[in-house]
Length: 338
Image (cartoon, rainbow, N blue to C red; front, top):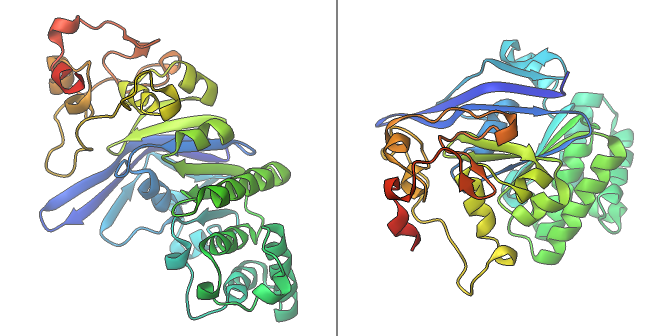
C-alpha cells in the first residue's frame, strides 16, 4: 500500500464569472522513502493539488476525489478536527515564500514550538530544547541564539531553513516541498536541496518535490509527474523521462534546457497555459503542440499505458517521433515552431 494515494483529484474554484477548474482528475502515489517530483509551468496546478491534500484551500474551492488516502486513512471522510491531527504531524508542507509564511510578530522558536505543543504535547523547556536541536539539524549557526530571533532578523535562506525545521519538527512520514528554493541564490538553493535529500534519506520519509527546475528533478527525484493546465500529462521514472519523454509537452520542456540546446538560440514553447476562458475542447496542449491535428483539437486525448509514460496524448512520442501520427501535412501548428 502506498503512503499517499490520490486518485482523480479535481479542484474547482468559484469565480464571479463561473467555475474554474484548476486541477483536473490528477492521480498520484508516493511510497515511503520515495522522492516524487511534480513539474510544470506556473498555472499547471502543482501547488493547488497539494494544498487540496493538506486541506489549505479557501472556501471558494470545491475538492473532489475518487480516493485521497494517506497512510491508510481516507482523508475525504475525515472531519476538520481529525485532519488536523495528521496535517502538520505525519504530513507536513514547506511553502514557497518563507517571509510570507512565517508570522513576523513571533520569534522563529515560538513558531516551531507551536507544532511541538499541539502535536506532541511538550512542555516549554522540552519545546525549547527540541527547537534548538531542529535549528541545528537544518544547519543554522548558533541555534541557541537564533531561536529567539524574529523572521526579519534572518536571511531568506535561514528563514527557509526555519520552515524546513518546522515541517520536520514532528518527524513526518510525508514531506511536501513546494518550490523550496524560490527566490534564493544559487549557492543557497544547492544547500537547501542537499539538506532536504539528506534528511529524507536519513528518516526514510516520502518526499513530494514541486518544482519547475528540471535540473533539480534530475538530481533528486525517483519518479516524475508532469502537469499541464491542471492535468497530469505524463509520469515516468526520472531516468526514463529524460531519456525518452512520451508527451510533446514533456519533450518541449526538456528541449528548452540550456544543456540540451542544439543551436545558439534556446528553444521555447510558444503561447501560454490556457486559462478559464480559452481552454480548448480537445487536448489542452494542442494550441502549442507542433504535432497537433484536427483530432487533437476536437477530441479529448486518451490516457496511454505505462509503457508510454501514462501520456495524455493521441500520438505519444517514442524517441521524439509521434506514434500513429498521420503525417506532417496534418499538423496545425508547424508555423509556430519555425
